[in-house]
Length: 328
Image (cartoon, rainbow, N blue to C red; front, top):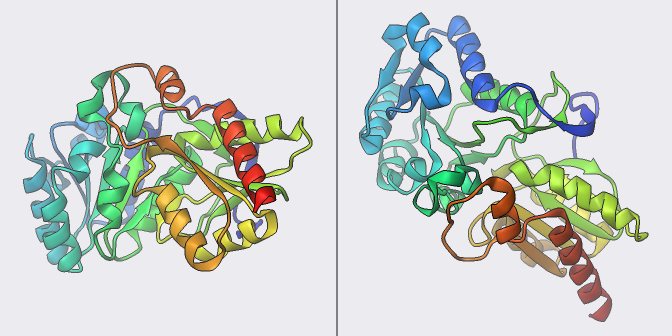
């Protein structure tokens, strides 16, 4: 599902020392130095995302639109229409729910070229609580034609995704964890949009995981291995378009699947994988994530337990899927 010479998987997952927002800001600075068309727009969150140095270096290419998210997207669409490459940013809840019509009409319907960043996705909004937890952003964006949805896992992937998105015409929605991620990939890895990455080969169950759930999926695979179960761990970092070929190939081999995502199980990764399996490879599927409810205030570790997204929950879901396969 990937070219080994382009993607290097790190060893034991460890927490990165550099926050993803710093990688975002640094990579945009790099891109801006190479291409005068790069501009950034923010909705009064430049300090939160770390782009103040960009604004100082390129004041004529930096726009703080204030708390006017819909206006920001419309402005970015206009900039795209005259040949610029705009990157917009606000929290994921505002980057999806609040601007859906502008994204639909001004960006997608107009077939423009806007790169939209939604930060603090899902439970990573933590103490900002349920109102700020983007648990439906992928569902909203998946329903709009022509948008590529990407959830970078770590710093290496984020840097490559940003460089490629800047040079790939079309509208992108990128879910961005602002704080430190768990390192999964080595620096210099090059990814292909729409192609999932197999992190661990297996034969008994396929675990499809995105974002902050990838490291937990690998831990769950270790726990399953202690029971003699070989789990295949796959990272479909492009949620749209989903890697139909890769998902189908994995589940044809294992016969059972689990998805785990930092999102409502409706409309996100779980739904995308389910659609692929329904059409191409019917098999037992267990979906983990937030089950059609609102978020709440709390630290990420607590929220993982609250919404049953821990490694032990993944193990239980894998065993259920395997049992369902055997009982068919």
